[in-house]
Each structure stands twice: as structure tokens, then as C-alpha cells.
Image (cartoon, rainbow, N blue to C red; front, side):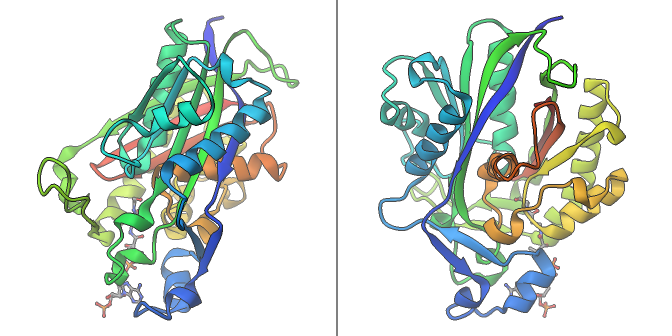
Length: 326
Ligand code: UT7
């Protein structure tokens, strides 16, 4: 038996404004039919005035702490995954920390775009297993609407804003009601920077001095996504010592319904075991996995004792997966 990170609570937050495909089609040369057929997206939430990555992250973290029954004073670590921080610095994680009234803990951001939450989860898990941290809040939060080129219909219809968070607590030999040991059983991460130019933002503090806009070669990203996600899922299951048929739920990065279907098919997993929120949230980058997870926990699908797999792939490329007994 060894020290593990138990996932003991989750929370999420969405901007107030929901924008349907039909509403988007009033200002962008697109149609509800095209977006639904090619992506499965029906709507997304777009941040308004006063709503930022930091405010959404704080709301998600607060709900996750409530669900976990953990007081902010117990938190030793906040890791926030985002590609759209409130400012270049300080880290948005420190704004969340201040808003939660935590005066001293470790707090920093992680940038791995759509796989950011998997990277943040892995860092937090390592720090917990290393013994330096007992309670961690891991957040994925984004306001991609602010780096969209709203004249580019090939990208602006695909993304949305939101945040999701989970609370991890160190535990040893903690069993679920089913008698299985709970906690993060494995994580697997990858990056291949040769593909930088397939999905990127054309600006930054050290190059243009501007924030920039998102650019993507969608078809090429699509091809890599299905291959990389299938292989990292298998890798994470092997590392955890479990087989695909033992998995209760897959919580994938929500980029495109066709990627979710193709990945499930490749692994022989029934689509009923895949949590799908891309229809309502679109692609919320680092927020998408914890957001989808929280939806499925709160609607009663994911329960304690379930074997859950997270997976994501994004700009860089970066990709990763995690196997967790809830
Ligand atoms: O989060 C990181 C990971 N990101 C992803 O995984 C995204 C991966 N890629 C995708 O999801 C898909 O490639 C897209 C949804 C981006 C595009 O779907 P596609 O089936 O690959 O379409 P396409 O790029 O081949 O475009 C087909 C046609 C083109 O017209 P022509 O050249 O055939 O006349 C596009 O100009 O659809 C046109 N098109 C649109 N039409 C209406 C592109 N965007 C739109 C649009 N509305 N919004």
C-alpha cells in the first residue's frame, strides 16, 4: 500500500451568457447544420464583462472545496492550468488563492493548452505522493473567447469559456464501498514540439508584445488527436494495471464529437461510457475535462468506486491521460 492522491470533490463554473450556433450564425458566415454535423457543438458559453479566467476558476474551486468538505485553510497547493491567464504575470492561481482567503500555500499556473489539466493533475499528484503536500486544488480554466479571431469561421465556432476544479487529498489504503483502493492509479504525459505550427496563438509577450489570436490547421490536428489519444489511453491503463473493459467512464477533452466517437471505437469502448459535454460547452481547452467530470458527478453518473479515465490532447502538441478510482 502506498500514499496516493484521492479525488474527493469537484466543481465547475460557466459564464452567464450561452451562445447558440444560430446566434453565432448571425455574425459569422456559418450555420447550425455545419457546426453540429462537423463537431457536435450546439452552444458555448462566452465570458462577459467582469468574468475572467480567474473569476471562473475561483467559482469552480469554491464549489469543489464545498463538495469535498475541505476548508480553504487546509489547502497546501493550487495548480491552475490555463492558456488564457488574467495577466501575463502573476499566475492566475495566486488570484484564486487570494479570492479564497488562503494566505499561504503553493500556487502556480501550468501551460499545456488543452492537456493542461492532465499536466496540472500529474504535477499535483507527484507533489502529494512525494509527501510535501496533503491537500491540492487542481483547476482548468479558460476564456478562449478572448483569443478568438471572430472573423475566422474555421476556429471561432469551436471554442467556449469555462472552468472546472477537483480537490485531491493524500490517503493510504483508502477503499471505496466496492472494496477497491481509491486514488489516482496512473498518469501518462507526452509532448512533441515539432507540431507547434498546427495549433498556436500568433502573439505573445516575448515576440509581438500582444496577446495574439488562435490559429489551427483543424484537419491535421484531428488526425493526430485520434492516434495520440488512443495510444495514451492504452498506456495509462497498462500503467494502472487495469483493462479497458474495467473502465466505468471515460472523461475526454471535448474538442469534437467525431474525435470522441473515433477514439472510443479504436479502443472498443461503448460510447455510452464516454462523458460528452461538447454539445453544450464546445471546446473549453484546459477546462473541458474537469468541467465534464463535474457535470457527470453532479448528475449522478460518476460515483465513488468508479474507474474513470481522463484524456486530452492540444497545442504543442501535448497529450496525456490519467486513470483514477474515484
Ligand atoms: O483542442 C485541441 C484539439 N483540437 C481539435 O481536436 C480540433 C480538431 N479538428 C476538428 O475538429 C475539425 O478538423 C474541424 C471541426 C476544425 C473542421 O472539420 P473538417 O471536417 O475537418 O472541415 P474542413 O476543415 O475540411 O472544412 C470543410 C469545409 C471547407 O469548405 P470547402 O473548402 O470544402 O469549400 C471550409 O471552408 O467547411 C468549411 N468551413 C465551414 N463552413 C461553415 C470551415 N469552417 C466552417 C464553418 N461554417 N464554421
